[in-house]
Image 1 (cartoon, rainbow, N blue to C red):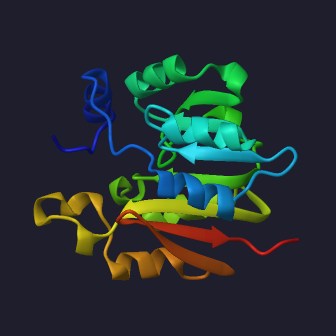
Image 2: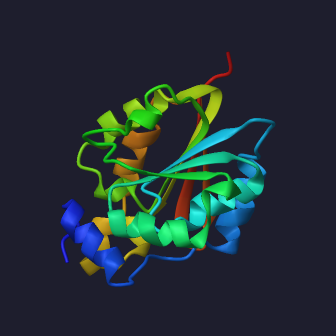
Image 3: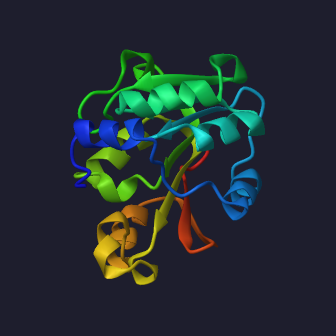
Length: 190
């Protein structure tokens, strides 16, 4: 299935399919690298069925989980109620952000297994970076092309693509989480 349309993603999640589960390594790295402070807010962009968003809520963040597949958000809502500190929002950050995000500022923005599917990564990252508070972090978790079979290359980034993503950030930390690259990109404080 080609994942280029809202319909394709909706069908994917409606059929009960999902993606790679959040690993213990990813959980540990997030807790260590981007711990929540008092009143911390996070945006999980492309939240899918909500596993990462709920984990961030467990870390202490108030979380907006954003996806454009209605079936993904329905499944996410069943996993964890809004009372847990997660708002499930429908929108396509490439084209239209939900009104609820208009005034939002976040300490953390995550894109887990999402970046390879974005058509205009640079523009989307600029838009997301504009939503970060000073000192905030953008975390990109993605498969690497070198670790991905050729037939699944479209879901991974190569070293050149990663170089473009990290250019211009005040701080860049790269980690390995069981074969996934975890990029922690930080804005300067103040």
